[in-house]
Image (cartoon, rainbow over all chains, first blue to last red; front, side):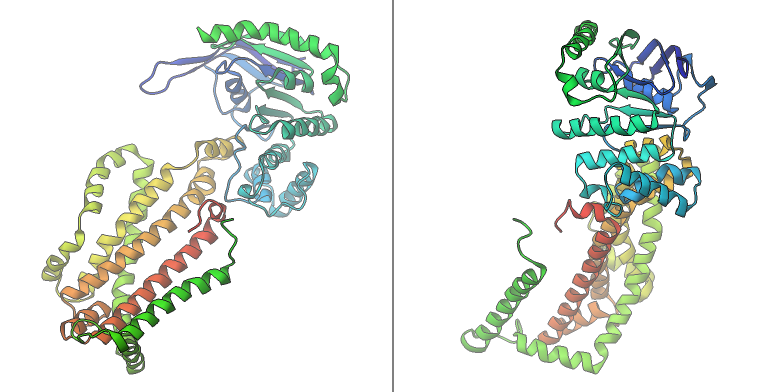
Length: 258
Length: 260
């Protein structure tokens, strides 16, 4: 249960000419190795901030966070993020984008291209290696983002509302593909989303984050069997799950509005 | 459908209208219109003068002289303009300090300084190159500045997230992002630079394309004058076209966003 441990995390932003903003206050979370955990909460509650702290791009002002017992010292090939707005480099081909992490790690060109090609195949984009991002649809771009994140074979996959920019059908498709890929690799996943349904469908556990400043408010374990299939979303257990999540979330949504 | 017409079709249409225009001019001036050779001329005479100039060799010499001055001024504009623009993009202080001054200069008709430059630096390549530089440097400054400023912060985060250090940010995000802006700046700078060389040679020069144009104009040798203008137009179109091609090569991801 203690692969990722966050204790009493506080993160405050201090932009110039504006009041300081505390995104997380006393946030705590424990994640087991290979667990798929979703974070839901109102907008601005600090879920993405937490992801950035785990990634190593942000430093917490107080509290501690450890992965496998070690403190986080900055980004590492061990943790990779899939971004909501894709974040693909427009001047690079699909192959060039996927191999970014490997390139920055110092892997030789032949080896990294081979690995990148494997992943491009895994996410179903074989044949598109030489395409540019502007030639791809949203779903395809996000697959590139996923392939890129998986390229360095990280232990922790951080996903920041990865499917929010996609249409409903593509979103469903990508969810199923993600589960397939995850089933094979069993990486530890932290998944941020606004969709209760998505959180319940994908995860082992759904964590509800309070309104800003974010705190760990509630946890709902998801005991549905794996592999998950679409029909499960129509079952009464699933509805109960969504109700439980919604009940915890509801208070936080009204809290933000005041 | 915007792309319904193929390239060939577009070229035919474009050339077609030029042919119609020239044809109408020639026919009208050969038959119906009465014209004074001091003030206007017609295509067939221009063509004859063109042929004579090309074979005679003076045209090439003039082009070489103008070209040399243009290239010198343009190269200087690149070497000075890009770093200044980059520094303005990187450091807010530099931007605040330089922006008002440079904007004012950019907007001013610097071409009016041409006579002054000739007086101080004499007739010759230096004055011409300086004039070209003054006109061509600003698009490079402002476009480089815009390019650096328009760096997508998301991409900076992405490269950092995957382990990029400062050097990687410059090489993998900022530089590739700036290049299309610089090339677009080059396209503007060419137009302005050509004006510089032309006007510079109008005022005081002993050789060069602009000099030839103004001298022929002064002596009422209109077909020869139009030849010069035509050559300049072809050079301008050729250079701008080449840079457009370069833009498309250098920034294929923007090809879908712009038609021109």
